[in-house]
Length: 115
Image 1 (cartoon, rainbow, N blue to C red):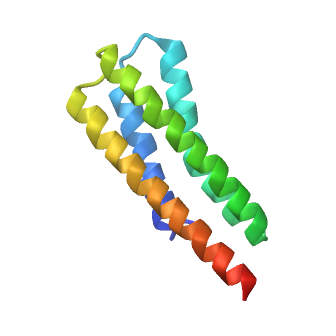
Image 2: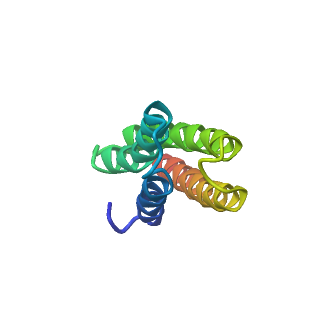
């Protein structure tokens, strides 16, 4: 799992989300976005260790959903001035990269399952 680029990228994203919101007093918002970000990383890990491609794909799809949640919440993060527009754009770009990697891994797993 630690060798998966998408897991490494999602781990880095979690750290950045925590850093951006470390001083936020909006505990509900901070908790929600942090939990969603951690969910990206953890679902990749759980799926990887599941032992079946079908289960791994299911967890990867959950991880994609968490990516979309964080991406959406980042708009609020900048709207509420919890982060700069520049930070929002950078983090959303990181998420887009992770989503693309997840998509490619799902396609790979689906293709190899048919062989």
